[in-house]
Amino acid sequence: MSAIDVRCERVSKRYHVRRRRPGAGRPARLFGGRAPEAEFWALRDVSFQVGRGETLGIVGRNGAGKSTLLKLLGGITAPTEGEITLAGRISAMIEVGSGFHPELTGRENIFLSGSILGMRRREIAARLDSIADFSGVAAFLDTPVKQYSSGMYVRLGFAIAAHLEADILLVDEVLAVGDAEFQGRCMRRIQELKRRGTTMVLVSHDLGAIEQLSDRAVLLDGGRLTATGSAQDIVSTYQRMVSGPGVVLDTETDTDAAGAPVRISRLTLTDADGRPLLAATAGAPLIARVAMVLNTERPATVRLSFYDFNRGTLVTELAGEVAPERSPHGGGVELQFVMPKLLLAPGSYTLGVTATPAGAPRPTAWRFGRTTLYVQGEGSGGVFAQPFECRVSPVERVGAATIQS
Image (tube, rainbow, N blue to C red):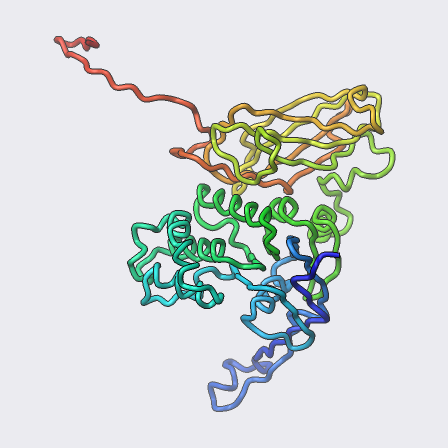
């Protein structure tokens, strides 16, 4: 069994919340008294462990206790009950940039952050150029950070946390900071750290990122850990929970019942060499791999849809057909959508898949909201990165006519 880097044992966190007395127009403390307090348990009896090199995703509604848990792991606050054990140096992407000293320059804050992690000055200096280039604030590195824009502030904070040497990395809702170009860089960096064996605990409302980055996941609800398992299963459980009782979800889990004509088990994105990715480059090759099972003698039409992540509008759709004879091993088959050049403009997209057996009036298998793609590259806005070249030629104007020389 691999070593355990993070261990939580029956961890609880209690806060005292002041409330107004019934019928009181103002809190009692304004009149020299003290407003009554009520107990609020942000976490109750949470236990889990994370193995060395493993990525654990944390899923839950707003207010479920996800950020509170990361703050406890990061030592920002202490648990009321229970015990947390960490093995190794820890770096936290929690409210990135919140630990900066506003009067210090970007360079000085980099060294300050590194020293807090216990790094030597020469170790920090060796990573200085990489941090500056990644954050995009190299030209302002000797400017006090109080003069930075909010975007520059957050980008530098993320770059510091992602580049300073740490054994355990805590990530809280910062995978979508900045513009599309920076989002792509963030995803690539997280994947690189994962390949290097960094232990990570990841919180995000981006279910696609959770499912694609996490080895396992846990579900928090009302401060309690209610489920643990594979990232795919936990995302399915969470989607069922937030949709309410009686709602049929558009995910592959809801069509996994025995005898379903088509089941979609997985959608993964890779580069031309088969390496999984979350961030792609406009104009570069991209392969979408759809793993599915056919329990029917009829062929099925599979549609891959790209939606704008923020607006939810359909951007483009690809379609292919798979026949039962192409899936000899128990009905399993992988359908690949090979795109020689990705022509989407830089931005954030979510992907969905549907499968419709021949003759069926509507799709019988769905998968939506669980695969995210961040597209990097140069672009001037819009939806598509239309390839073009700009040519300039001298001309002569003769009377009312224009003649190209």
